[in-house]
Every structure is written in structure tokens, then in C-alpha cells.
Amino acid sequence: MWDVEPSQYRPNMGRSTDMLNAHPSLQRLRVQMTDATHHELQSTLSRIDGKGYKAYHDIKGRWALPDFTLVVDYVQGDPYAAPSRVRVQVPGAVTALPPEACRPGPRAVGTGCLLARRFQQEARSRGRSRGSGRSGELRIEAPGQEVIPNTAVQVGSDGSLEARFRVGLPARGRRVLGGQAQHLLLEDVPEIVQASLVAAAYDAGDILRHAEVNEDAEALREALEEHGLVGFIADGASLPRRSGVDDRPLEGPDVVPFQSPDELRVTLQAPNAGSVTGMGVPRGVTLIVGGGYHGKSTVLRALEQGVYNHRPGDGREQVVAEAHAVKIRAEDGRSVSSVDISTFIGTLPGGVDTRRFSTPNASGSTSQAAAIMEAIEAGAGTLLIDEDTSATNFMIRDRRMQALVPREREPITPFIDRVRELHDTLGISSVLVLGGSGDYLDVADTVVAMTDYRPADVTNRAREVARAHPTGREPEVPGPLTELPPRRPRRDSLDPSRGRRSVSLKVRGQDAIQFGTDEIDLGAVEQLVSWAQTRAVSEALLLARNRFMADGPTLPRLLDAVMGALEKEGLDLLGHGHDGDLTLFRRHELAAALNRLRTLEVDG
Image (cartoon, rainbow, N blue to C red):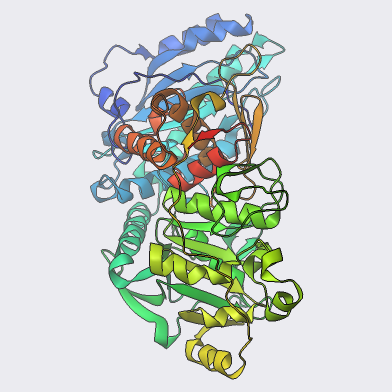
């Protein structure tokens, strides 16, 4: 994956419209009549043929090609550097997109994601080596199965659009290959535009279907609260994925379509699909139980990813979770900075006070406790937990272990003894996948059993089992939940500098951010779904430091400020201002990155 060139925060980049509406540059398309022409670009490329690579700077700017405007924003320093940043702006008269598919909001987002994926396919088919280094590369950061606001393709309400992508300008050694550049920019790019950014390139109704499916997913998610739900899985949904590294739906005769148990079936309304039936996941404490390989974790994974919308054909188009559902897991070795984990972990050996717990190397139990408290601090409404990725001693201490190790020698208050209180006191629901901790039957509101990927409501049976087989386990709660003390991240502990660079950000896949000299490990943050989303998080950390931390806000207020600015000013507030590789994230992923910054220091 490419590293991007160093970013510089721009405090006065100008206000963009809402990120779900038309980008201002689409409006400028109507008034800028003095762009250089197709012929002039061709002449310029001929003139610089064979010159040193820096001669490519002569093509920076706007060029009026037939049917669209080509904008070269940034020219790479040499053929081995990150490819150049380029945009195409296509007026609505050329795209001829259905007006109903361009309506600002989820419809325009669904349409933009479809067009970006097609652009990516066409670019891959034409991108090839045209010289040294990255010469000839064509790349756009299109979304995968998820449909999330992004900067790759932005659709205006009038059908005009802007697509942003990367181009490796051709060279031999460090000499310009002008002829290859002409073929790339004046033949390949126009062909890609015609094959991906105009309505005629798609089957009838396909564009509108993508717009409507995305609008429906938003409506289903918004309907959860009024129905007392934290999640919904539609009848007929296809949940299994092809593999752990391939998020496309598993196909074949053995795939079992999801069907809700009658007891949990609810009907929600969507503006285009109408009445949609499926399994509602109620507020409270829900257990997903069953034998191994019967689909428990697959259901949880679908809910985990249900905080995002999905493309038609994904199988999870009508699977949604409330927007503040957060996946929690143990994470050995992560850093923790001044988190109050005393709700779950009492005083540790050596007199370590867990009301302001810090460590560069957390254990499974302390990391999971910290993750829960950090999620609560960031505003989580639902915790999603799989026992397979949890610390066993954090989740449960059974009766035999209680007898063997007295309470006074065990600092951990297991999650089973707090899960009801989290809901009853704070309104935080939990959905847990369990295969071996039957004690949780005592605290559950709803129990769903999975058998051969088929769910059944076994809540009443679970209560009978709990009564017939009492565990004798004693709750181990030293006291009620206490209010979280405020944490105020220190601005000087977020240092993006590295060597001579005042700002050095690099994103290594979707799991790691190099922030200055510190690497933030996000491998356990399972609701990050793409490199472009992680890159946006990295830029948001920089935005937070430079714009919102001068007066020492609490962490929740800092998150409010960053997310509010993005909602008001758009994703172009991040990065260079016209980047095509940024995808919207939630406040929870931003908080996760900040909390895993090893240099982080906080004031009380």
C-alpha cells in the first residue's frame, strides 16, 4: 500500500458543503471557462518529452477535455514516489445520471460508491507498467462491500460529479515519457470516464437500485430505536463470508439464508423495499449460543459490520446495528493511558491504583477492561463481545474458582457481574457470543441458539436450565458503577513530527498508523474496514491536535468537535483538500486510535 506524501494541516481551507452533498468544485465547473484545452495538454506533453521528471509540473492545473475537465492537483517528485493526484469533473449533461439517484444524502452516496467501484475495475484493466517505478499506475480508492461516504467519487444533486484518483506519470529512469503520458491521460482516462461515470455504461435501473438500497439501510437503522432494538437481520440475508480476508458473500448450495425465529421476528419499514421482516435484537443482554461452527460468530460479525450500509448483492443489505455498537476484545500488549478500570479491576499487586491505570503492555483482562471503559467514554450504546476473543478470567469466575481463590485475592470483577448493571444503570446493551459460559444464562434477557446457521429463540428454555442447574456462583461486585473521571488528552503528547518533518503520517494497510515516530496498532479495532478509512482517522488525529486541543477539552468533547467539523465542512477538511482516498469513520474508531497512541498523556 502506498504511503502518502506528508500532510500539512490547513486551518482555513474554506467551508465545503455537507459531505453528503455536492462538492464545491462541482459548482465551479459551471463558471470556469478559461481552462487550457485538450490540444494544449497534448502539446505540453509533447514539449516536455525526454526532459527531467520535474518538467511534469507544467501539466499541473485544469484542462478542458471533451466531455469533462481534467485537474492535476499534485505532481509526484519522481516515478518511484506516490503517484500524482488527479481529478475529473463531469457535468450532469454528460453523466445523464437519474435525478432520483443523485438526491443528496444516502442516495448520492450509494450512487457514488457504485461509480467508484466501476471506475476501479476499469482503471485496473488499463493500468500497466509504462516505464520506471510506478509509471502507468491508475488507482482509485473505491469502497469494498460497505457503502460509506468517501472522497473517491462525489455526486452532485444535478448529476455532475467529481472522481479523484492517482496516476503514475510515465518515465524512463527520471526522464519524461511524453507519448506514454498522452496515451494515459488523453486516451485511457477518457475511456475510463465513459465506461464508469456515465449512465449509459450501466444496465437499466442498476444505478437507481444502488441508491435506493442505501437509502433503505439508513431507514432501517433509524427505525431500531423506536422498536427497542440494537440490531436487525432481515429474513433471507446471507451472512457467511468467503474467507477471513475476502469479505464478499459466500456462495453455493450450502449457504443457509437467515430466517428469524417467530418469537423475535419484527417488521420494519423501508422507503423503497416497503415492509422488511427479520430478527430484531432487543435492548438489554442478548446471548448467541450454540456449538462450534454453527454460525454464532458469523451473526455477531454481521451485527458488528451492521454499523455500515452494504452494497446490493452483499447479502447484508438489510442487516443493521445501532450506530454506536462497538466490538470489544482483549488485546494483549496494547498501551493504556490513565483509564479508570476500577469498575472491573481493583487494586493490583504492588498497590497499583486502577482508577488512573496506565501501562505500555496491558494483559488480556486489563486491556479488555480498558476497551470497555474507553468505549463508554466515547458514547457506546451497545457492546459486542465474542468469548473467543476475550480474556477468560475477565468474562467469568465460576463457583469452583471462587472457592479455590478467595475474593480478597482476586482483583477482577468479571464482566458477568457488571453486564446487567451496564444496561440498567447506563442503558448500554450487550450482545455476547458464548459457547462455554453457561453462568451467563442467569443474567440474559434474550438467548438465541444457532444450529446449522439457523437461529432459534431459546430464552424460556435457558431460564428453565438456569433454574434446574444452579451454579452456586456468588456475584463479586465490590460496589456500584462509578462515574468516569474526565480525561483531557494533552496536545503536546500528540507529536506528528519525525526528523526534519513537522508532520509525518503514514498508513500501513488498515491496521497501522505511523504518527510521527509512534506506530499505532489498530489490528484489534475490528470495525475499521479499509485503508482509506484508517487514513482519514490518521488525518483526523492531526486535525484534533491542531484545531481543537488548545483549551484542553475532555476526550468526549474532542470527539464531538472533530466529528461536528467533518459533518459541517466535509471530508475535504482532512488531508490536502482534494484527496480521493478518504472514507468516513465513526467517533469510536477515532477514539480507538487516540487511545492506542503510545505517547498519549492525559490530564484529569
